[in-house]
Image (cartoon, rainbow, N blue to C red; front, side):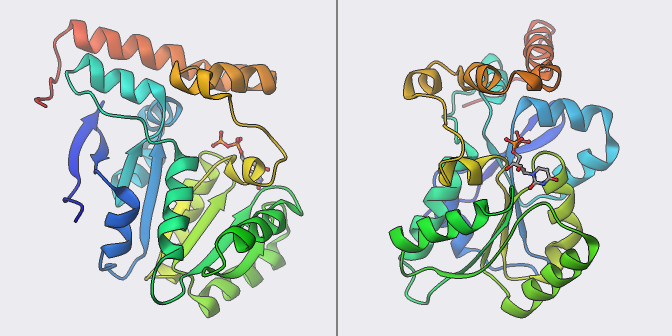
Length: 251
Ligand code: UDP
């Protein structure tokens, strides 16, 4: 039985520590506005520091899990050693557990380039046949398609909705729409559809182990360099906050 997540703060933003996040989520009673899961990394923390709207979305989320290596570094510097839970691994674990549920769980895949969400749905349908995939929608569309998408979500009431529009668009989108499926778990999954569909490759295990997944990403997508400056900025801030002795967790 998973325990209630402990909440800690990363520069004032919430982060939850839970042993088995998928199990905990599937067991929760929803509170009528859907459950928003955010997979936190340093880029998001830096964004939240300069953007009050994004900070509010983070504070409103029901579960914020430690995705990025920077976040793990921050916790470690403040005396708390926790494992990383990459968003893509969390999302897969959630699907696998949902597949074992006695009543079929309805799943929706929204986001990524045209054709990608379809491939993702086919893959998971093959691997996890007990899931009921109730819809897919690419992340590039006009306003009329968005209206149709919202109708489809209202009508199908999925239990799990993955949104792959990139940060922060997916978090804003979920925050605005979560109430339309009050029983759902909503997760922003960034580039996970591209990886599940085989369009992009995840960093090799060694990079993951050495907390260098970001470096592999930069090599694959060099145009991200400006966005990724948030990483060293965050790491430096984390070191300074440790040196200044602010906040120390007891583990
Ligand atoms: N994307 C989308 N609609 C958009 C912009 C992006 O569907 O208007 C998709 C894009 O095709 C990709 C994902 O969102 O599949 C973003 O992936 P990325 O790796 O950039 O995610 P992040 O690093 O922002 O989490």
